[in-house]
Length: 283
Image 1 (cartoon, one colour):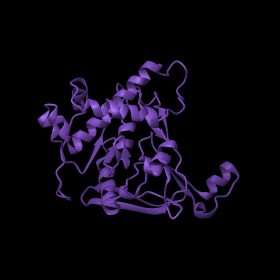
Image 2 (cartoon, one colour):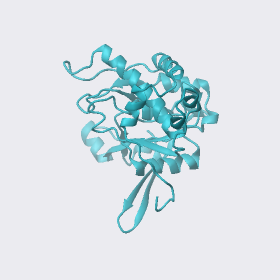
Image 3 (cartoon, helix red, strand yellow):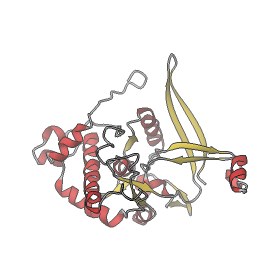
Image 4 (cartoon, helix red, strand yellow):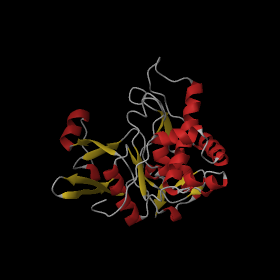
């Protein structure tokens, strides 16, 4: 607020439960979305140990809930005239949000499905309604990451990747562990980017420009590229030792070599916001 002159608003996560239980969402769009998900979002391998895995009936309920969560989060951000038509005039207004986020952990995710599906779809340049501008939506309600994503989105008109930097693998470490040397663009080492599974599907590398992988502005994306992004993604049941409430996490490899710019904004006491920028390539 102080630095950017932008107002932020807080909405308690119980608002999502209220809207689910009181059915404050477009039921027709929900049914459409659920059909689309069943056709285009295949489940990945359930790697939870036996005795911990959720039953099929519970998994189906989780799919239903994460779709509703996605609809509701979008409505909270940008509003939905359809809600006014249904009698929910106040809820139809939304918050006119440029960016948003969802805390989830741990009070929500210990009991309800995690936000991975919701965060992935909102950050992606398409959904059951077709190709559209990606929304900026931060995992764990990480506002500083969210504002970094917003900067990049407004600068490039492209979807943004939310991923954690888990590991730096130096050439020496790779050689010691695998016996192999890193070639080409990776010769100076690699950063391992991963999270629970909340990264835009644009990052699959299935969009092409001059035959090379890229992430396009939404108006340049083709239906064939949407199809390839979906076909190269599995939705793995959430790790129940982390997310007791279940949910589904996008699982894919980024194919092709793409130039990327990473940004992280931090608030430093006595100084203010500081952005760290790193440039490189996906490998």
